[in-house]
Image (cartoon, rainbow, N blue to C red):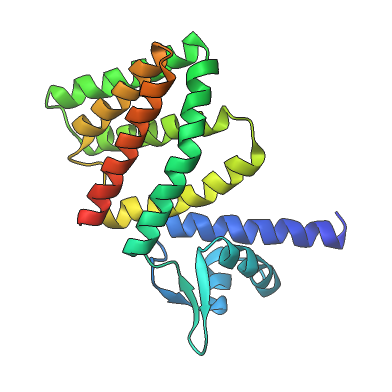
Length: 219
């Protein structure tokens, strides 16, 4: 591997390591962190950290504060509103496309996963394991809509926003205690997709995202 390729790889590793630690809550929203601490945390050289910082800043995951250093994105009302608005803009087109083009098998798989979780939640068999499974299925459905567009520009933009959404979920709204309502909202979307009703699928999706936004803002 030549020097340029190696440096690119290290830069990518630095970026991926930071986002991993961010979502693992090893660093917290609003926290100030030094480049030295990032080196210790990621185990990567200072040069790779410095090269990853412009990308992290451009994506709004950190910002440089004069005389104080690097600050991890702070979860505030403005970020919540902007992140959810961005989701709606992208996912309206994505769910409309998915409704038109998804295979019957793909839709059936989504229904099966959601109905299983809904049945467990409605039977009173709640647990941390069920919460984790429900959260994975939740994110998986939305990711499936975006991935079906087959547009790398949209997928990359959505991925960055998803990091912010996961931070918002951690800080402001967790699925625990809300599995029944979230699964009901998802099932309404998927059932509209199964009927190939584009307008209803979009309407149900927007209502679902707005509901999640309102819960996050109410905390």
